[in-house]
Structure formats: structure tokens, C-alpha cells
Length: 225
Image 1: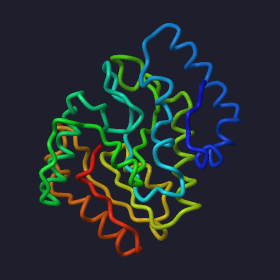
Image 2: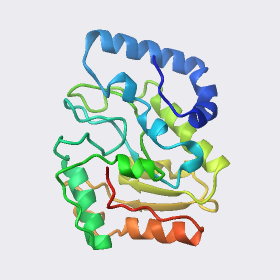
Image 3: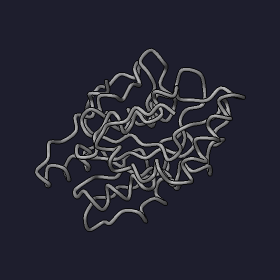
């Protein structure tokens, strides 16, 4: 597998790349790609790590799977390439930002690269997926890999904001020391659950308030690409 990943993350995650489970994961992905269309493209699998260096991470947003329809997945959770219509969950995220911060972000673009460049790690727990089959690459090793990334941030960094939306992401809080970091939880922004408390959670202003308390520059959430 051709790996395109920032050198800072490669050093942190090198033990994972060399572990037996990752060799098995690699063989699984090779077989999958021989038989099925998979997303994202190989060069984008580690895009979250390539776009946001380890020592620059200010905030983490955790997703579950890449998007599984053509042209959507780009290796950043919740993000889609420019010119691809934002999926419903992302539309709701943008709505909450606008309501929280008084911004007027358009939903014509869903490319969140601008966040990644500012230090927001947009990490899916599973980094690949078979086309049209959500969850198809779960339980093959990716979760161990991405858990290791979260644990590395927890242990080697301090003052990071973790935005955990939905029960799957919230379960990852066990990997995070709340004495060293700030954890924000809310229901998932999906249309099925956004009205149960994602809308009105004000995570974006709350994240920035914490970062400023830590002496860090806040995130410009209106800069999505």
C-alpha cells in the first residue's frame, strides 16, 4: 500500500504499520480492491494524517466510516470534495456552526480541508469502505490503528479538544484523559438524531473558548476549504 502520510504521524504510528495485524489488514485491502470498488482512493486513505501534522492537532472530530458512494470519500471525516453536494450530516454540521457562531457558511461546498489545515484532525475510525456497503471494512484492523492514533494524542499532547458525536464516537472517550484534554459530546448530526441535541450543542464556540483558554489560536470554522 502506497502510504502518503505526514512524517510526524508516520513516526508516531510506525509501530502500527509494522504490527502483524496491519499486515493482515493490508492483505484484506488488496483482496478487496481486486474484487470490489473501494473508497477513498489509495492516495487519500491517510489524508487526515497527511493534512494535519501530529504536533499541529488542536481538535479532533471522529467519524465512523468513509462515505461509500462514488466521488464522496476523501479521507477526511464528514468532508466531501468540492463540487460534490454535502451529505445530510454535513449540512446539519454547517447549520449548527451558522447558528452557533452567527456565520453564513454556504452548503454549496462540503470540502473541510480548511479545517484540517488549521489543526482539526478529521478522523474516521475505519479508513476504507467497500462501495455502497457502509461498515464493510469494520473489524479488520482499522479500529486498532485509529485507536492508537487517539491514544498517542492523549499521551503525548495536551489541550486538545475532542468533538465526539453519536454513541460510536462517544465510546472512544475511554481513550482520552479529561484532565489533559477537553471532551465535548453530542448526538450524531445525522437527520435521524440531530434534533436530539446536536442542534444547539454549540461545540464550535465551546471548542474555541477552550483553545483560547489554553493560549491557542481558535479555529476559523467558516473556512471550510
